[in-house]
Amino acid sequence: MSAPAHSYRPAEFAELQLQARWLDTEHARRAYDYALQYAHPQRYGLNGATVEQIEQHRIASRTVARDWLAARLSAAGSVQIVFGDDEVCVVPAAQFLASWDQLFFPGRDDAMILHNLDQTVLFYCHEQELEIGQRKRA
Image 1 (cartoon, rainbow, N blue to C red):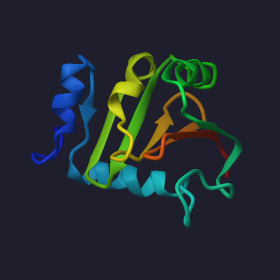
Image 2: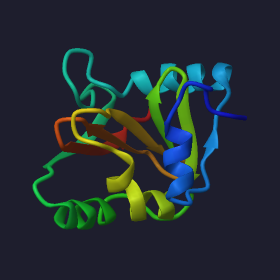
Image 3: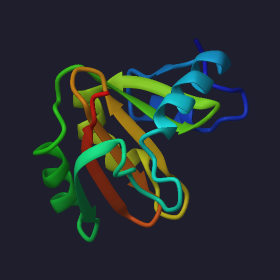
């Protein structure tokens, strides 16, 4: 599976030596549609109807934010990073935690991150905010 030809992200991920597996168009669209249920319908952030135990962190210091996130997101397994309906990849969670602040840029990126081993969902907002919570079980 490969990323869309127009995307700059695979090169950025490769430069960071991330083991990213990019989903093809069909799988990316399905992943995006699935992730949308956890996004707030009217603002940037998580949806309280589908996510519980939501915590927010305004990024003022990358070091503090890195520690905050490491205390809340497991390094085991992998995460699926959903940038849009045609840009979705899977990376090892430990690699994500070590380099997330080099993957996302203020003013440019919004992303939904879903952990594969538990119900954790993370939203990175281009306005330098993180929201993390637990996906509600149906």
